[in-house]
Length: 373
Image (cartoon, rainbow, N blue to C red; front, side, top):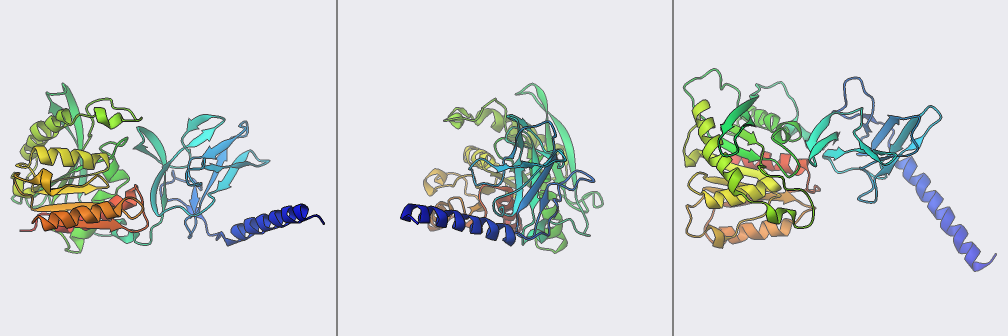
């Protein structure tokens, strides 16, 4: 046999063996994702973090899922004789929540088997890959707080704007007790539903309170955009904080203080946010240091001692990100802040990137540090 033919045969044999080994290594213990529509079996997730999809589309010619190939085009589904398209991700997914969509014959659609979540400026399908540490945001038999929608007047935008407010367990019973407040912002392309729906912020708080690890506080979550910035090169260069800052500091905070039993002073007020919400937190806390005593940037940049110089000193600066993001930048920023005399804390979420498990873990680490007397 010629050397070239021998090499080609070896390559095909090795490739076939690799495919068989990979297929054999996938555990067939798939279960429906926890975010599936009632009664829907797919999408499914196995114990290794693989995701499997099944879509009925007998008249379609191609279906691809946006998850699964690490940026190389998603998971291509294969059509069966029964008209169902099936496919499994090439490898295990990162733990936690992921947005995704289907591309069917070139059109973008949501998966009818799962719930939708607002992200990427549209309602996207969502899937949950069980995390090894998911207990801290699990729904448990503990006293639960309440997440309620409020509509507040905004003269600056000439609209009625929406926010969601988490009040801790017991808020309705003891009418004399007042609470600190964390203003918590979502990321770009998301809205004020994100921290409750994707982030499980209320469950994280309920579980922490039940174990006595934190002093109860209120969380306020509102929409962080007042203009129409769209994605693209340099898009956020045109983002101006002024309008949203007015909504938050001049309209929402006074409304919350008038409508809820808050401890309405700087020492009992915090602001934090993920990604774009971190950028907003960074800008607003620097512009209005007299309003907030606690700052938190979750995958949302860093502070430097120079920009904080000569401003009212915060009680705490919390900066976090995933280990697959830029952890050295976070760690170095906190080292510099500590060296300048600030109480600063860094947190790195292991084996996560720019995603909600990073931010769930970050909130879990942040909450016990807030509002210590």
